[in-house]
Length: 180
Length: 282
Image (cartoon, rainbow over all chains, first blue to last red; front, side):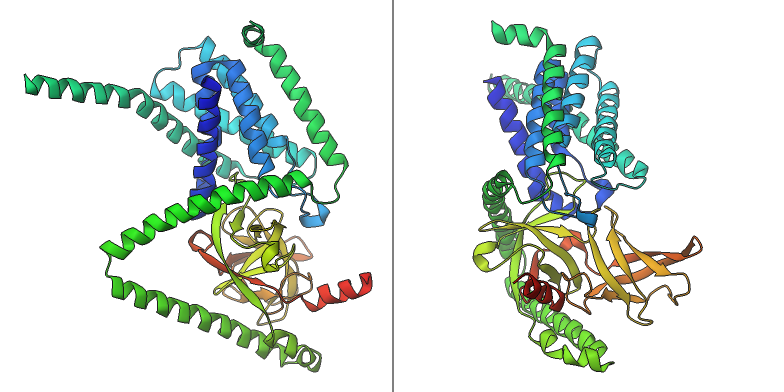
C-alpha cells in the first residue's frame, strides 16, 4: 500500500515535471520535483524506503531521456543509471538524517532539501563529467538556485501535508459548533 | 519478515543497489551504438501520457480563455499571430535567399531553399530532468519524421529531432549542453560553431580573433553541420570578448524564446550535406 503511494507520488511528480517544465525552460530556475519527492519519502520513511524510491525515480527519469542519441563529439546524451545512482545516494542519506536527527521544523527541512539537491547535482554532473559524456562547465549558480528552489518546494510540500488535514478537522469542528 | 530484515539492514541494501547501478552504467558506457529498444518503448509510452496530460491542460486553458476572454478578439488575435508567424518564416526564407544570391555557388542551391518542406507539430511535454533541455512533440516516424531533422520556429532555430518514436519525438533544444550547430555571422560571414550551455544563452566558438564581430550582429545557420538548413536565424551577438590569442568568446542570445514555444516546424527536406551523405552510403 505504501509502495503504491510512493510510486504514485513519483509518477505524479514526473508527470507534473514534464507537463509544466516547458513553461519554465529558463534553466537555473527549474525545480526537480522528483528529487523533492525522493527526499520527502526518505525523511518520512527512513533510509531503506528512501534509497529504493531514489533508485526507482532516478531510473524512470533516466529512461525518459534521449539516451543513445549522440551529442557533441559522438557522446550519448544520457545514460540509464546515473540519475538513479544520484537519487539512490540522496534517498539513503536523507533517510539516515531523518532517522538520526529531528527534522520537523521548516529550517532543518530546508537545509536537508538544499543539501540533498546540491549532493544530487554534484553526483549527477560529476559522473557525467567523469565519464566524459556531458560538459557542464561551472554550474555553481545554477546548482545553487535549483537547490534553493527544490528546498522551498520541499518545505512547502511538508507544511501542506501536515497542515491540510488539521485545517479540515478544524473547519469541521467549527461548523459543528455553529450548528449547536 | 524478509522485508523487515532488509529494512533493518539498509546499509547492505544501499551497497547492493549502488553496485547494480554502477554495473548498469558501465554496460552502457562501453557500448555506444544504436538506439535501444527500451528507449523507444519508454519514450513512446510516456509520450502518450504526456499527450493526454497536455491535452487536458490545453483544454482547460482554452476553456478559460475562450469563456472569460473576449472570444472574437482572441480568434482574431490567433489569426493575426498565425499570419505573422507565416510572414516571419517567409521573411527568414527571403533573408536566406538574399544570402544565397551573393555568390554563384549559392545561387545553384536556390531551388533547395525555396522548396523547403516542413510539418507543424505541437509541443506536448518537456524533459524529465531539468539538466536536459528537450521537448516532446506530437508527431513521430508515422508523420515522416526522422532523427537529426531540424526543428524551427517563426523566430528562428529551435533544435533537432533526437529520438522519434511512432507518434511523438524528442527535440534537443539548441540551448542543451550537448547541442551544437554550424553558424555564420550574417554581416561579416565569420564562421564558427554555436553550442548550448544549458542556460538561456548560446556560445559561438572557434571564431577567429581577427574576425569583425560586433554586438547585435545576427548569427544564422551555416548549413555545414548537415542538420540545419542554411540561413536560419540562431540569435544575436550579445557580448564579444577576447578568449586567448586565437579565438573570440562570443555569447549569443537565441532568437527563440524556448519557454513560450507551443508549436514548431520540423524541416522534412534533407540538407544538401545529408543528401550527399545518403548518396555516398548508397
